[in-house]
Amino acid sequence: MEHLDAELLSLLALGEHLGTDADAEHLAGCPECSESLRGLQHAVRIATLDLAGIELEEPGSQNWAAIHQALGLSQALATDPLYQRTAAPPVSSGKPAARPAAADAPPKDSKEPEAEPAPFRPGTKDRRARPGLWLAVAAAGIVLGTAAGWTAAGVLRDTGTPVPAATQSTPASIILAQTSLTPLPAHTGSGDAQVQELPDGTRQLTIRLSNENISGFRGVWVGSADLSKMVSLGVLANDSGVFTIPAGIDLAQYPIVDVSDQPYNGDPAHSADSIARGTLNLKT
Image 1 (tube, rainbow, N blue to C red):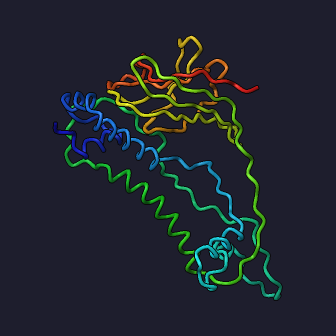
Image 2: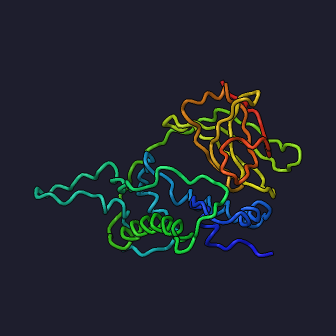
Image 3: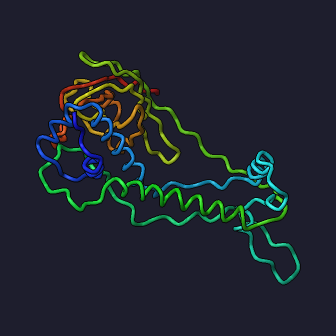
């Protein structure tokens, strides 16, 4: 059997409405191509992740001292590179300059995409001369390359003696609810779900669900107890995923966690084919 080519799958993962009806039928019935598409969609979501609002905490110099000792680096590289890059310049009075409380955060990219592509059934447009998977790979490479270059520059540039620094404690997340996910008839996937509240008040649903061969993609939902109301949270591309729960959703009114088999037909509504389901045990 001839599978869909990599370029078409990568364009579908990027949200392009491409391909023929025959391509759509093949994708619906081919577990290998469906799994490849889910993996590519996950790569796109990671590469286009919005980092706005994520604050990075500066590690203390004792962390670099431990790394320096574990790697057996030379004494010339003993100084904490973060401290050297953020230390104040010498003052003319001859007194030692005070160390800043924390390093400046790296600049944030203001051109990140506002929304991730939604899955759909391919259309019939021409896909020649269009970018492929390398777009997502390039985006991820920029993020990783920038971080690696920033770290390497600090390690190779500075020397001196490490200075101890106090570390800041980060408030822990709170577990609000959890449940087991039980497979529905005709399905075998099972797992669990957990809701956490982050220090900033954001609620996140973590899903772990064993994979199985399905004809579509796996949609994640929260719903009312009678399943008359369902809210989509996103697509579960792998065995696990993390989804943000909208601020207006009251989990006491939407205690059901549902993972469905969604066809590639462009319809955003629940397919009525649930793979696994569970009821959140809310903690008071």
